Length: 426
Image (tube, rainbow, N blue to C red; front, side, top):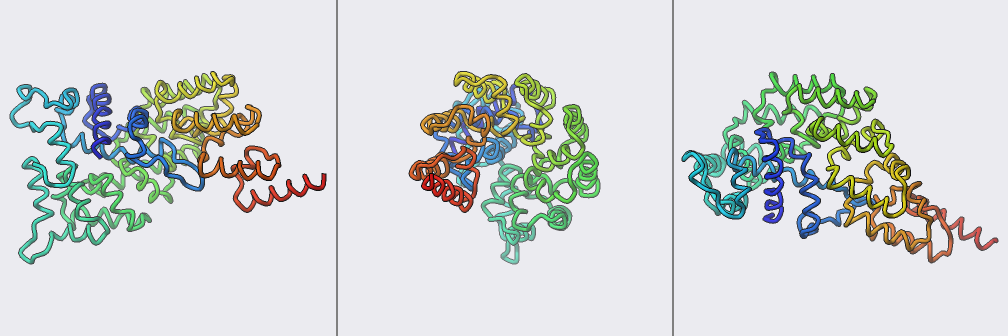
């Protein structure tokens, strides 16, 4: 936790210094820098890079969402003095520069307040925590806390949310929390997902249903969000409902400008709602121009892998391009690889691409096989590539790379059997 927070402090410095923004939802565009740095400092201890699903490693973009909440913690903790705290890390900033009303906690003290509640907290947070911790005259917790616990939120999780966002402690059960929860359930959000959504974005309970949430949802539906998929959209990115209409419109206009159809815009917003958090002029457009320079169909890439547009050109995209150029591939080859497998650039060069490339060289395939099947880089080296290749090698048969990796176990063994029988008959 401490390492993760420290790296996030670095990220906050970069983003806050550049933008000086008070709306801290758009942290995502610079998370690529955080992840790039984090991979070099005990990454596996932070998030467990060994997370594997069906033989496929999780991408950087999929891991990214796990880090976002820490940025909200820091923004809520320091507010306007955040930049100074970061710039002076790990020493306390110059106290004389601040108004007496601002918190004077050192970074160390503030990090401790985000740990178990044994460290000193400011009076605002102490009062907020007291509202959820103290038993009433009946010897029970407050009604809204009991309600949240019954929903599946652990008391410690509720306290952590309040440390990040003290106003949550003052939301009434009947006036704010319960109506939002019931509304989410009516949309089809599983009850088990509610605690996760409220933990990610407790501010949702402070937004008026009739004046803000529902009108914003209607507006987004008009822009293309599939109304049948709201449960998934909100779970993936609850902050979507907190963005202004000009911001929402700007992103959608950009998608149309890039050549996406209305259907593709709908699918993009539904599958990757956090694309709304990316700045059009500072992130989306430059990234589109970069991929265009490689001969990639930008509209197709946006439709297939919109998460790729959250990556840094300098820190993520260019190093991968330069690697493949050094390995002997042409710009046209690289453009084809990206077009066929948009998620290619979401993987770490050091932790994923290079180790798999080195093993590929031992497999006896021509290098152009990766142009035909760049999805190779999406499979786990230890859980899928090595075991499957060992079986093929042991049988003494030859299979296309995509046959080795993409087939289900049943189909894979069927193909092996046919190839082995043919080899024997010959």
